Image (tube, rainbow over all chains, first blue to last red):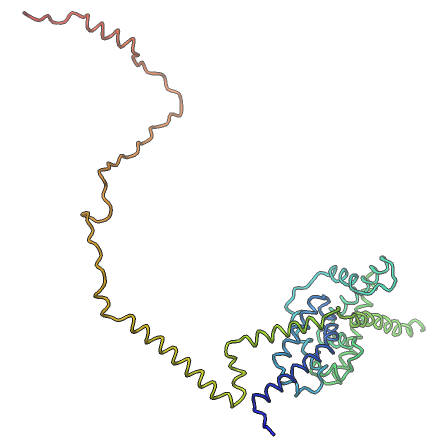
Length: 186
Length: 161
């Protein structure tokens, strides 16, 4: 039996890494896009973030074996990318958000007026979310992903599960206050 | 009492409604073909990585490639040294004796001659009149002629014969 050389072993390992990476793209590109879009709220920016995330994975593909949960690991990568991008991006006017939401959200048989009203409402809610402190806002945004448990949110954010729970509690309280305040001002 | 009881429920429903917005956004489908585009990006990155000259980091992984790296480094060194020696052979210090001397300039100061040209300075513009001046009594041709005739007819000192 011929003993494979280290070069051949490297080649085999590279091919395995490439196959794993391709499978990850097929499996999680959509989920990563949704995570990116929930923060950036722009389809092109969200897709750019996903591409960048997979390029990072490609650069460190030799460490794929060491990763326990690929899904959480990938979400963490894309989460850091979108937060970084959002920090660097200029703040857009609220009207842009409303128009973008009206364009992106599903119509579900609503009339144009109803669609516009719904988009206005969603934009208002998102404006309230933006007013939350960063830690609370992040937990609230991640909790909207039903496929993410509190343990996984904790892993994405690099905190304990109990702090995720307490942050979520605080976020909901603050959110209620903000919504109540805006309603009383109308 | 009942109003106070309703408040937390109302508040919770408002928050739940707000979270519904976040859930709605989180559940938006990804655009079609995003996987293909990511695959294409990765393929491009792979090509760029493979196109790197000598790919040193990849070669450094296996110990079996160490001798190959040494041979490549030695070959590069030989090529560089050979090139340097070739340049040294072609350009030698005693070759400066074969240099063609520059022609001696012919003119006294060198450069081009004047070819007998005389420089004529540009005429200075005269003063410009800002207001009209009375015409001076300049004798015109007829007056001049009359004056000359008058002078000619004037009896001067007669020559003595």
